Image (spheres, rainbow, N blue to C red):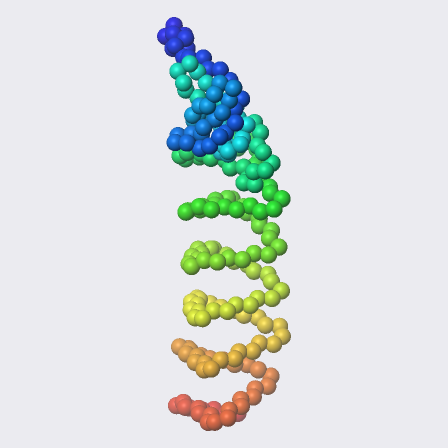
Amino acid sequence: MELRAKIRDIVQPALEYGVIAAPCEGGFVVTSEQGIVNAGVAVSCLVTPETGDVVLISMDESGCSYILSILERSKRVQKGTELSFDGDLSVRVNGGRMSLASDESLSFASKDFELSAGEARITIEKASFFGRLVENNIEKIKIVADTLDSIVRRAVQRFTSTYRYVEEHEEVQSASTRMIVDGTLTMHTKNTMHIAEGHVKIDAEQIHLA
């Protein structure tokens, strides 16, 4: 009985077509056959109204008006459609899949971005990344590439063990090179050739040449 009494107390609104004239504080100025009204935007109206839009509004005797939906937008309006939400937003798909597709471009902008997935596959014809800091914590990395070019001002690498296999040619060009080995340095080649324009110095407690 109490619920029925509350329903009877609610003012029944009337639906009316209108045209957005201009934005105002708390909503928009709408012109209709009933005159000019200041209407707020209903929570269910996700598309942000623009000047010139034909809208469906609800009006009651108390003067409360809401824009319920955007019915038509002029083709002369160059601005794209905008969905506007206040506060937190969550989109959930239960028991199905979700797809986002665009014929031209798809952009994401946020102060903080987080992506979590069990498996991910990315296929990009050409990609560019610009940033200030990247931190990776990965258990295993595998890279297969035809060509790899890296330009780095300073690089520091620390490994427990490294293994490198070069099938053809390897070349290192540097202004100076220094190698420090705590244990044994072993070089096994078919032919070895050292060429120096200045001095060649070998300093050791024992030197064996055979």
